[in-house]
Structures are given as structure tokens and as C-alpha cells.
Length: 105
Image (cartoon, rainbow, N blue to C red; front, side, top):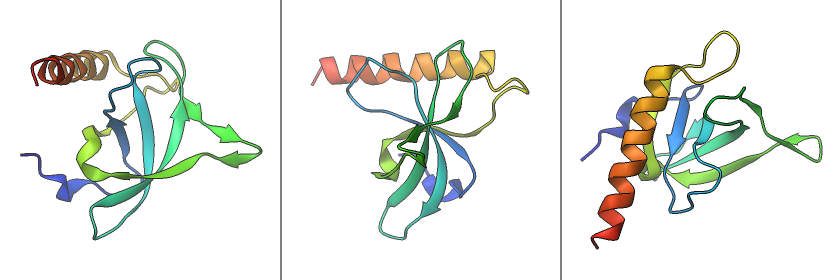
């Protein structure tokens, strides 16, 4: 069982959902509630591309998600706004593991 107590506002987080298209799902924690939810400000990018805040109708795109959907947190982007190579490897391994678990259920 993961310990989410270290998740704090300002941290980058990677989120798991069953949808494979669009992975990875990256956001920045805006706030953390005591009820197990967090508010994230989504970023838009790709495995090898640049990540920027996702803006919809001139507003940053945010949503509330369960903290239990996090698969990685407290990582950073490169100075050029890209995922670091070690983060890519770790995220791909986690997605693969979770996809395999879902297949076996």
C-alpha cells in the first residue's frame, strides 16, 4: 500500500487511469484535502515532448482526483520542460504493471 502523506501542493504527479491514449497523465498538485482527494492542474505534453500547463478557454484546466490514483509523485522536469529519462522508464514500468494487473482481474 502506498503512503500518500508526502504528496504536497506544488508537486508534479503522474496519474493512472485505464485510458491508454494520452499517457502519461501529468499534473501539478494545487491542494490536498483530508478526504483523500487532491486538486491537480493538468499539464499537456508527451513522453519525449515539452510539458506545459493545459489551458482551456484561457483558464488552467484543473480537476479533483482521488490521491489513490497517483502512481508517481515528487518528480521534476528537465530545464527544457521535458520528462527526465529515469522518470520515463519508471512511469512506463508502472503503467505496464498496472495494465497487467487489470488484465488478470
